[in-house]
Length: 273
Ligand code: AIR
Ligand code: ASP
Image (tube, rainbow, N blue to C red; front, top):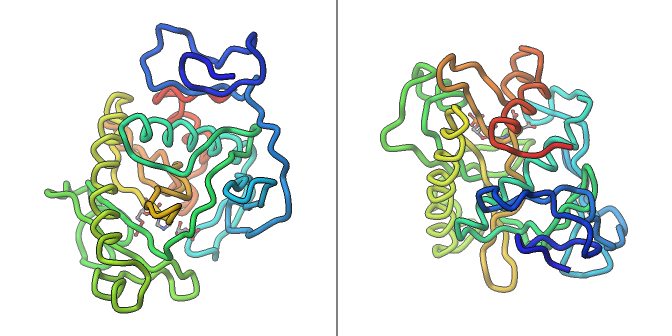
């Protein structure tokens, strides 16, 4: 059954969690929309998510764990509520992007810390757009954190923890067969489009989207946005104070990591309960 917001729900009575006067796109509460999809064998376990096969060969279940890691897995910790927060945060962002015409793998929330997604053939590439200098770009080029980047920069990284995700370019991607030329063009185009959509969204919540990382995969001849969009994979600062509200709080031992993620969620209107 589908509510007027397009959210699949178990019964007619179960609301989708949205008042009708809410601006679309809308976001489903977990209640009333637990999918009947069976969780099968574990396919892969990453640093913060575990991926399971399902009874549908085209679908996977992502389990967002409480584990958090940084510096390519060198620093790890367990943070209460993080799996739940990131699962719901990611669902919200993916639906905002879908609403803006960006194709993603997201299907539905399955539980507090699980989502159903399309099974993609992932490309081993990370796409990073930066609006403000922070993190590795500052170290690499000796620039000061906080400088506005005009135009926003784009970088490809190879997804390879053992090699510390080296910076790569279009030629490496094509020469080593990590993606095709049209896919390279589409990844860049879509990542900049995501930047436009999300920069506005975060600005409405009084926040600066400093930078973020996306991953893409193939699905039935198309390239879809995969993986996740959460405060683990982006930098977000308070617009006025420039307080860090993302995984840099963990990387730099600033404390209040999940509290910051919850604050970002609240400012964006992501329902967490
Ligand atoms: N990122 C890249 N690899 C893993 C992650 N999470 C994200 C960071 C940051 C952006 O990509 O969270 O938002 C750029 O990271 P860096 O380290 O290159 O400055
Ligand atoms: N390399 C990323 C970071 O430093 C992700 C990770 O290592 O888990 O946060």
